[in-house]
Amino acid sequence: MTEANTSVPIYPDLHGKVALVTGGSRGIGAATCLALARCGARVAVNGRARAAVDDTVAAIRSMGGEALAAVADCSDLAAVERMRVAIEEDLGAPELVLAFAGGGSGRPAPLADITEEDWRSSLDNNLTSTFFTLKSFLPAMIARGSGSIVTMASAGGRVASGAPAGYGAAKAGVIMLTRHAANELGQHGIRVNCISPSAVLTERTAQRMPLEQQQRILTAFPLGRLGHPDDIASAALFLLSASASWITGITLDVAGGRVMT
Ligand SMILES: NC(=O)c1ccc[n+]([C@@H]2O[C@H](COP(=O)([O-])OP(=O)(O)OC[C@H]3O[C@@H](n4cnc5c(N)ncnc54)[C@H](OP(=O)(O)O)[C@@H]3O)[C@@H](O)[C@H]2O)c1
Image (tube, rainbow, N blue to C red; front, side):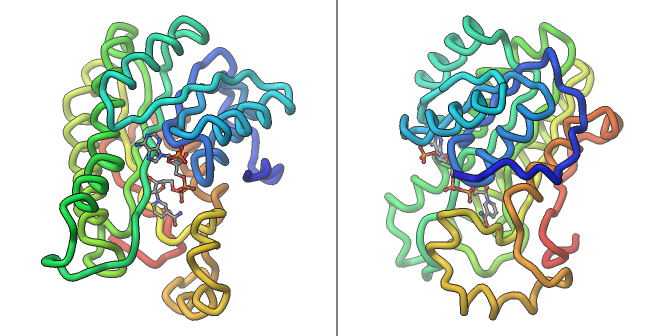
């Protein structure tokens, strides 16, 4: 479980706001949940596995924050709807929605070797989950006339190498879905932006990438290090903040300079 980084400044002030982080139980999402809670938000922590969700909720509560366990598979619309109802009853309707659920599966493979199961799972967990989250939580945001959404892409959705094609296609889809949402929702006072990280060291990625491999790929990063989950949390806080009030529809590469678009 990611520890809170006390070097992240407590900005913006999110007291009185409700945030949902899909994929908030582990890795980047968990770091973002902690950062949101440190800024005063009440946080609904989503994931599929109950134990990891409960761990992140407990970490928030132990620092005096308010959090709710919101277990659901975001690629299942009915489950997302049930989660929405539970969050609204307990915390109120979120005005900050961070659709971070997803992840890559496996190594790049020739297109003809990608199984139907892998393809569908990449699309479901990364793109469809983002769409279902927006679809379910948007009506209340529109009714309120304000809100901010951050979606999660990847360098794999920006550059056609290094990631499985299904994952890359799904993340490129998230970028375009974000633009459509921004275009449609600006009139309702809702901003929608996307973060596109390159390699961020989480428990999962650290397990998959031995130290020698981490050292080897460093040359691709002008800033000379891999990402930390707090790098992504800080970018999310910026996009949610009033400092970003004239920013919508962008994809912010938080990538140590590895991706420059
Ligand atoms: N780490 C990186 O280098 C990197 C780089 C670029 C982009 N990203 C993106 O950043 C996000 C977080 O990545 P991470 O490295 O922090 O991954 P992680 O540690 O594996 O965490 C993934 C999170 O997403 C949840 N999740 C996955 N599919 C879900 C679904 N269908 N419904 C609900 N929750 C789901 C997981 O919950 P369960 O464990 O319960 O399934 C977990 O909370 C992902 O979207 C990933 O694609 C990561």
